[in-house]
Length: 266
Image (cartoon, rainbow, N blue to C red; front, side, top):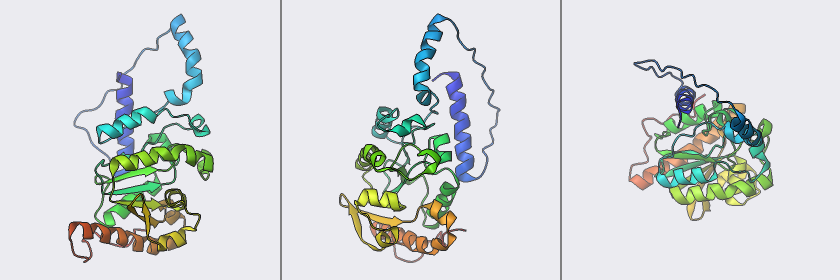
């Protein structure tokens, strides 16, 4: 990693921290910006011709390292994926992030604008709400894993297309196999339909008992849907309590309310 990439990586971390935790980090010493001279010459001009063909890859931000060597190796293997047309418009390949030994894996639909900018899942407004939902049942990003069905942002946040899901879903399947979660939470209709191979409305899937490769699946609303329609938060709270009961049963805790439990935040 050169000096410019290091500075970009540090700046990206601070942006992510501000988005997720809604606060700033203060350093004891300032970080100086490094000025790197732009090379020139025939060899550079020749290289720029090839660069024009791969500009979407070259503008990829430095990805935070995964929390296991296996996940990191898999990320390195697929981060330049060009299996569908979405690679032409993405800024970053959003692999996923979290605890590689997580008992709970949350699966969303696709990256949005902020996720595409930063290369991390759920860092925009929906991500802030998701963090509050985690806290309401005693979870945090330190003990879950978060990923999406699609790893690249659809233009204008349109719905994923069947061919895009078909190309990208094997990556999610392998992530699940590596993490081996005890519970999967499908956030939204597309994630649930993709994992469960169902064409039912989200409201119907929420009420059912589901499994994915012998792993229990709880279906709930995507945080973005809760932002658009706050009236759904009460139903989402019922789903969060299902997650909490599942985890309590695994640890032998009583079903009494967790001290952090409160209705889904406004």
